[in-house]
Image (tube, each protein chain N blue to C red):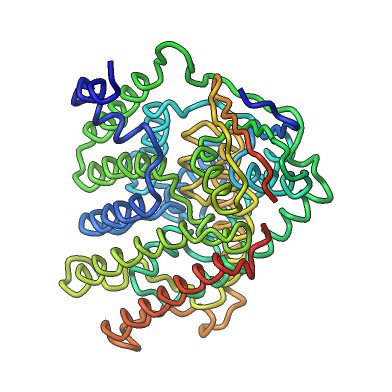
Length: 400
Length: 77
């Protein structure tokens, strides 16, 4: 049988499966879809965010073991199934797991001990950083930029500094302490290479379970967040969407593709969020934190360092955890433990020592009008694009 | 089947460690020698060919065996 006639005989569902799950998608495709899903979330209530959900998971954990959270949750902790962002994070994880199974890419992958430690430590730093900065790479950056928040610009500056230092650390570690990333490793429950793998069937069931969680809720907002979370998890895993890569690769391989992908998503987000704000569908100050400039820079540096040594930000850790990387399970655990403790014990004292000018809520259109703000953001994105491409071609800043 | 001169075991490692180790190993290899890279991160499937393409090293063969992705790369520099 010739190859062509074999292709013709492929069933229509097999064709669909191959198109979706045979190969990873381009990251920019994922980025544009994610921006549109974030716009959908904003139309329902508020845009995509990740650290708020993980903070809530942690607060529920701590309140279950009897720890008092009177400063960070004075009215009591919202239950997991009553908080939209907690549900969103749950179904992002479920969606990523389902997607990895469907693509036969799931396996429990145990990294060497040194790597596992970096996952946990990186997670703890992210937990501290996202609370101090009042948002992570998603709410504080991907949504924050689209929301025209001044603090979001400063947050990214902090992230870049943290990423830069962490890349230097990783290179130093590889030369001087190679044992950190070598040693005993393991892989379990991987898909069979020969014969039929049950992973796609399991993945299908997992996605159905995710949808069933959503449809068992009664509140419309919660249903929307839970279902969209499931989609987001799938898109994240399929496109291997990663903000760490976008900020890290200029200093490592020079690859500009992840940066271009994030830029594409931000342009779509800017358009959608601005329409929602101008038309009064959502509140103008949504995703504009009181973090300009001190909380954003301090939190950004800590978060940027943490996400780089962990190898994934809050959502990067979430979808990779779903794919079975034990290092990123530990990163998630680090975030879940550190975020509530930071909110309870560190953040109030930190904000207390800052003067009002150091913790302002800056909404760019208040200073530059909507048009001016959009032009500023597009110019920054253009400069970022030029920088990423220039650096890719010249290799000026990349280490490899 | 390609015969490898050296093997780099990146099993269990996630992004960016496999590519970092690959780059370091290739720097120390002689031109013409073949490296076998073993990885378990699905991210290596797009990343390793892209890196080879960018750096000019020749990706001779890829394979998968029970969750372990194998890459055979000839050092071209």
